[in-house]
Structure formats: structure tokens, C-alpha cells
Picture 1 (tube, one colour):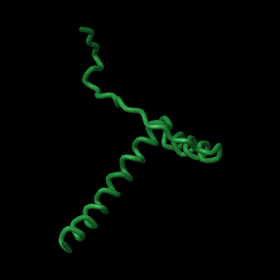
Picture 2 (cartoon, rainbow, N blue to C red):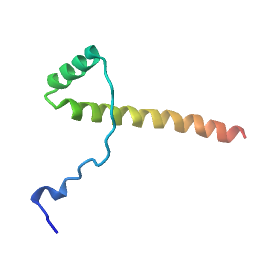
Picture 3 (cartoon, one colour):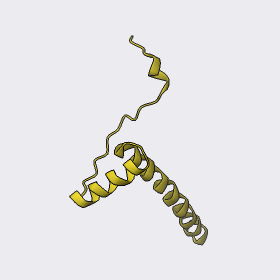
Picture 4 (cartoon, rainbow, N blue to C red):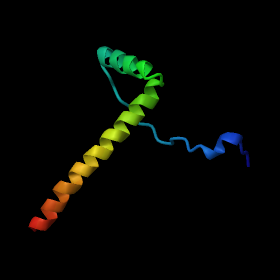
Length: 69
């Protein structure tokens, strides 16, 4: 079994594909470079942050729905 020193770092193991228009792609790459991070890392961080906000908003709606039944 091969091991390496970076085995402690958990790497993503699923791929999600996002299709951008050329202008959107330029915009994302520009903002990522302004933050001095790769575009894929910027998109991942942005999507995860938004998903956390969305799930919090949904929890409130779900709780209200369950309470109303």
C-alpha cells in the first residue's frame, strides 16, 4: 500500500461540472485571482458557503411546515 506525506490532507473525490458563459468565466477567474486563489478553489469555497446559508434558511421553512401539520 502506497502512502505519502500529504495523505493527511483529504482531497475532494467527486466532480461537479459548471458551465459558464465566456463573460461569467472571465468574471470568476478575475475575482479568484484578486483573492490570490485558484478559480476552482474559489468556486468551491463560494458554493459551500452559499449551501450553508441555504440549508439554514430551509431548516426554518421545514420546521414551520412540520409545526403546521
